[in-house]
Amino acid sequence: MSFCFNFDVPAQTTNPEEESGDRTKPAEPVKEAKEHLPQSDPQFLLTDAVAETITIGTLPPLHFLNETVFEKTAAEREDREEILLRTAEQRSDLISGVYEGGLKVWECTYDLLELIEKDGETFGGKAVLDLGCGAGLLGILALKRGARQVHFQDYNSTVIEQLTEDEEKDGISPPKKRAADLSQDPLLAKCRFFSGDWSTFLALVKKEEPHPKYDIIFTAETIYNTAYYPALHETLHKLLAPDGLVYLATKSHYFGVGGGLHLFETFVEQRGVFSLDHLWDGEDGLQRHVVVLRFKKPL
Image (cartoon, rainbow, N blue to C red):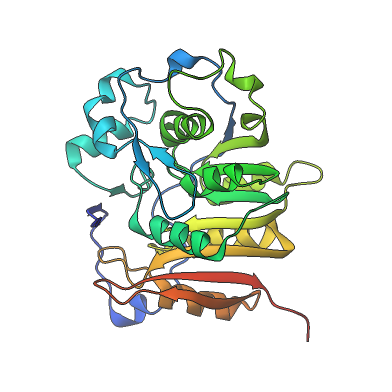
């Protein structure tokens, strides 16, 4: 299975000095974060939506809706952000400041799932954050394998409401076999759902006392734009538990946007908060990687 990026981003004219500088300001205003309550109405789901299933090794089967389903059923879905319509019209995987790619399941997500299967991680009793979750397959897997709580975050509220929550329900019980009141499901009760920019998401959860700390943070295909690195790094810094791990799946380079693993590694090294180790490096085609971040130990 292969994917390619088709980005709709503003044209930029840069000189080498600008290109090598610290581009820390997003081109668009941040999107305010909010929490989404789980939908309890089974009719919330489209009855004719057909889920695809992925099975990797011994991992539990995971279900998700292909982006094509969303394009064909856009008129039937609530979409206050109008991203379903705009992505279908513009045939774009990213509209900067409007839509950040959450309707697709990107290939690096599968790399991380395969690594989890290989390592046999069970997540027993752990708090997990699926950051930039999209369909939320990584978080759903953690939930199925014993996580104490799983929080899902994506930039777009439409993604959370129309994709992530649907997938999370499918991951708990097969379609047409759900309890009448999904809010009573014990696994669903372990989940929380958030949308918004990373900086506003961080500000929102930090209002809680104590604010969440996560043993494991998953994030896949989220370092494609260097302008987002400060907000991402700050979120990881403030929300990772002292002995926690951040699993990042990414490509070496994202053409058309400019981000990639080398630039992010340099950014992390300059900040001096995390150590970064490579867990897996692919060699076929556009190179893909899975790395782990952890807090540096005091000298």
